[in-house]
Length: 294
Length: 152
Image (spheres, each protein chain N blue to C red):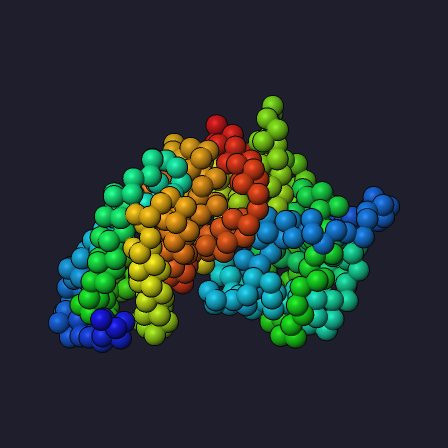
């Protein structure tokens, strides 16, 4: 009996130690990113628009300035309410004091400068696929944006999701760099895949999630419940989605559907960002969306 | 007609509609009908602006004039309280409309202003129409972003 109890305690301790090890932060290889240039702010602007940083990090309200990343928008989920933090270059309340490497680890690995996990409401789950140089350029661009001293608000999450370390186990289970859509892709489809799967993170809203919040790769872009309000995020793949490449590209450029309804809700800021990119980039996204739906 | 007067009797509808039959309030279908008429006209110009069909000055001008008139339809009985998406099915009108009525009216008025500018130039050439068409879409988007739910 005593031996059995001892065995159980040992097992529990081992399980705990394993969980602790697996849940630790896994930053980028410093050597691999050491060769990056200091970053080109002009290129970074395009990354900023494609990655949609402002959609979540600008102030609440539809009249918010998409260059002032003071945070405060609320995102309801099955796990609680996330509050987007201040990521303006303010040294105290934003990211003004961050190094390029810290920024890269935040965006591409979901790790804060003090080594804590970010929740995957922050789509590093997509940005992990980005080119590190693009994120270095993004860093250079974001440091040129206006600073704001609004303090970040804490998330409002239920147990056990309020234990940040548990996110490490989630990452161990689900955080992957692989592309979702694979096979022989045209040049446009490949560029579109990069824009969509790595930067614009279309799937984060348009793909349904499993019980632990991981995207269901088998129903990629097939539409999902709206986590933060009524209605559904529409399918942009599957039989119900019948738009042409021109329809998709025109929608991203103008906010107009093929039936001339006008974009609204959480897609409106996405269109506001994407319409500022070269049309060829939107055509590439369209090519990818159609390829993903095959 | 000023926007204020357009909406001055905005809440009157609440007294005219019985909450028990709120989901059958004809105002919901009627206001949706007016938006369909917006699209009927806006869409024709949109198809021309996007090059889906050839620009036709006369048809564009007619559509713009129609849009001018339908967007000036008096709104006072179309938005009774209790016809928001939290109260009834069959609408995407978020309750925030009624919580921020001033802002809603402001956005509606901005749309009317953009349509007026479009109506002034729609028959005067494709580039002129395109230039005035964009701001109309933007004005629709501003309101949809704040006040319209996702489709179900």
